[in-house]
Length: 160
Image 1 (tube, one colour):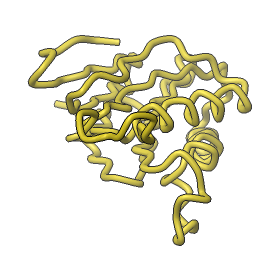
Image 2 (spheres, rainbow, N blue to C red):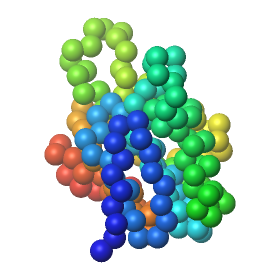
Image 3 (cartoon, rainbow, N blue to C red):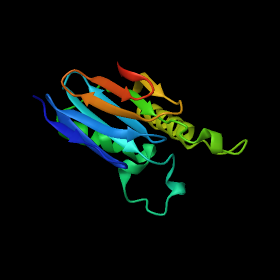
């Protein structure tokens, strides 16, 4: 049986071996899963906001894609990861889309765009994603092989 590490909102974890890193109840937030297949090292961040300008408290690097991606890479390298790294994204739902005024801010979409930008800047390719929609998800990164299992009431279970 593998160990499981639970990642909460604006948090992250890195691991190697047979660990599963999970984040539950992802709505407009985005899970960024990074993986180094050669080293079998993975990392998962549950980012809350698209940019630091949207928060008074900017000290938590896991809260924003622009700081979470470098943080994950640094911590993964401490466990022996050297790259190439790949990324899988999940979340970014529009949980309350019907309540948004026309032209209103879709936080989920903004989180996804910010995550993509941060990964591009870090030179990490996005190889799979399960984003958008109007439903929540739970995300499970299996560090042994890089599988990301997505579970949701609306869409069942599938593997990225």
